[in-house]
Image (cartoon, rainbow, N blue to C red; front, side, top):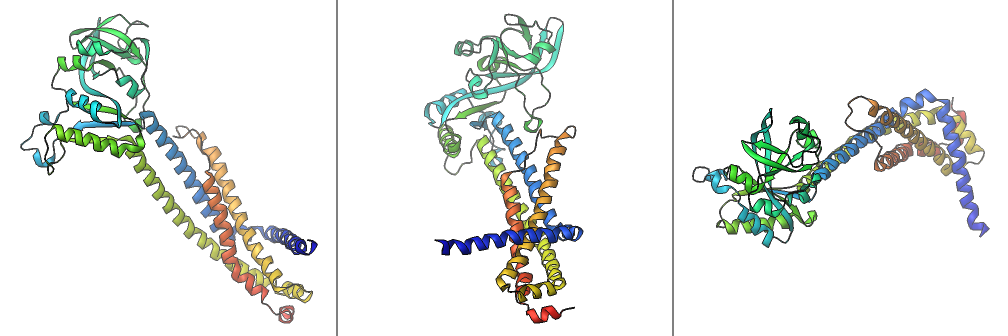
Length: 420
């Protein structure tokens, strides 16, 4: 047992002593070491800095998508380019009958709501707002959009079935129309028609990146009531899928149902279109992966440049310390020991550069979010970027330090001692 452990302890002790010797050499030539490792420092700052920003951007964008809802899907009527001379947009418009067909036959769809919109005048006493966006919805809209009623009640199927003139309004609308703090039970005029406010709906903040911005008055009325007031408004469907991972199956089901109902031949183009949030998330993730690969390539080139600098300085170091190498070999140092000394020195130099790069990025990560109007609240260096930086730095030290280390280990001790 002692025979087996002795070589291991010898190697560990040798490595430990060699690392301290290498650190001493780096410290003795601080300026030269920093300039030599500049390529490594720049490469590490590049990979960790860009990786940090990419990670923050990815989290930000995915949070925005999550706010919209990963299970959401939209369907709308569309006239194909080839049929615009023979087909009207009215023919392509979706109907409530098609909505019910999808609910009945599409197994991948949990629920849906048709939607139609118009900008109408809304009046409360002497207060008049022009161009208020009024949206017609089904009661299932609350579940799909995750918009809850704060006071009062949500829409019911009876409201839609009987074309009731009732409405929901958001908090911003209460302020802009000078309504009471609790306006449930009050009446307002929508396009000249008298509507009863039955509930206050929460205002959902949407990032400007997703088409949001300043909060404004929102008014919701039953879908059938909206169509009664203006039957020509455009209709689209907002659907909630059972499983967002099966978005393609959901799209295939809806395509089959709508094409079959509209009597389209196999060669006919779709007279509708679809969009799934999950597809946008997957597209963004694909773009993020491509950016990460490009980043790795750029950093790889930067580290190669830094590695060439490391190799050059190690060759100079071998030349400067030829007599020292000859003395060590004359005292019994074997070639592998000399090789390890210079190889470890190269690795330590590269890792020191990597550590400096990481410290620079950490300082930037701490200070940059303090800038006013910076889009991200906080930044964090991703673990993969740290591991990649350290691994590449060590690899560069081994690869580019090998040749100078071999050259040092192969020196003839007599010739080395005679070196001036």
